[in-house]
Amino acid sequence: RGYTAVLIVPTGIGAAVGGYAGDALPVARALAAVVDVLVTHPNVLNGAMLYWPPPNALYVEGWALDEFAQGRLGLRAVRRNRIGLVLDSGIEPELRLRQLQAADAARATLGLDVGAWTLTD
Image (cartoon, rainbow, N blue to C red; front, side, top):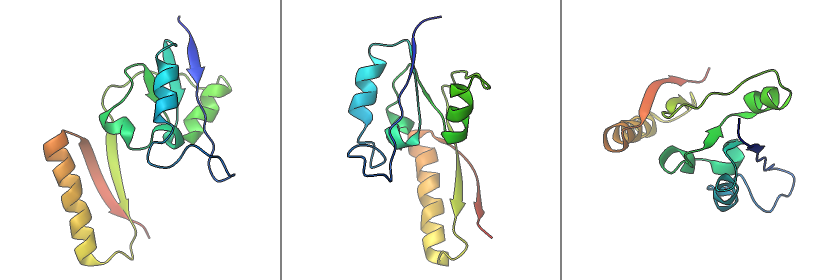
């Protein structure tokens, strides 16, 4: 089965590391180097996970991490992330166009799987 570790870095409570531009990435990489599977969340890796993922890391959001830690959910490695885009309904039309163009550029140049987009209510 191997050794699985969970790395959680909280934010919003005065934590010195985590939640900003992947600043916990060095810790995640070091831990991933000594375990078989590393389970972590967005505060740890942020967008860095999209283009520089540790091969043995499972990246999950908070609800799935909670369920996994309580033994109510199993995780399976997926090697391709799908991205959805949610834009605020108050966004200016030109800025919305620029955001959609950036998503198209990420799809075309990085090969990212950018799916549907929507506006908030």
